[in-house]
Length: 115
Image 1 (cartoon, rainbow, N blue to C red):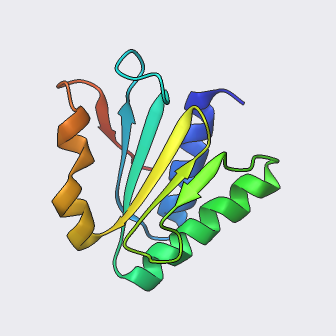
Image 2: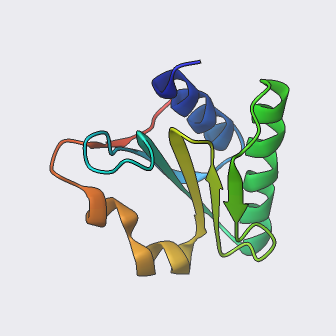
């Protein structure tokens, strides 16, 4: 599966499970670590952990396992690395603090995902 299609699948899983403000950041040509970042918010630590679990379950069904993951248990900010696509799921406070969208935004590479 191509990175763009994989990114859209992850966004769909997140929005289906009520993630807030799902954003795709196209980082091709800006870094070698990935092609896309998916950034999403959870309403609470419990919701954030739930979103992480849903993404991992659905991607596992598709036959894709993460390369690595960080912060999954805490529920404040989790990173799930799928190689070409890195998923960041934040609770509200942590997302505001790090605001990845503004760090990587070049004026045309950040897209809000809508179903």
